Length: 176
Image (cartoon, rainbow, N blue to C red):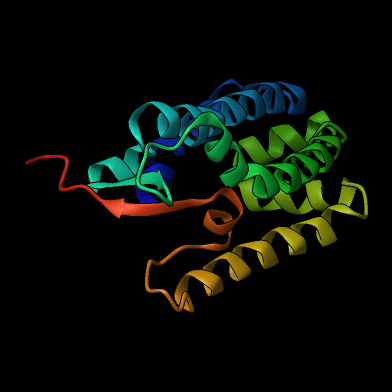
């Protein structure tokens, strides 16, 4: 997961470079992040058996019977996280586009708290349901990890694996 995160790091950097206005920032970052996330979690899993990080570590996602995961399983693995994520993204977008150009320019110049100040103002301007949705998103992640840690079959299946009928298996290091 950390390796997959590193693949996404250039996206906010590009959005900051091209985001002269709050709308430009959102219009640059969000579509690129959605595309990259869907590409890694749907198509990479379907075509190659895993995200770039999983493939580099020599593990792949398969169906419980050991056959390759299909698009259906890949979509089910990310369905809940994606639905909550889209809801939060929409709320954050509504907050970002309300930031005044004057404040935006100050944040870009490193004044007013920089990116941290920008995000605080975005949360203040976002609809009130964004914070509870964010808590639900985090609770989902904790439950997903808890199921993985407490898996009594020692197959290390997370909650999303049970929903999708998948398992993560070792196939050998990618660089051998």
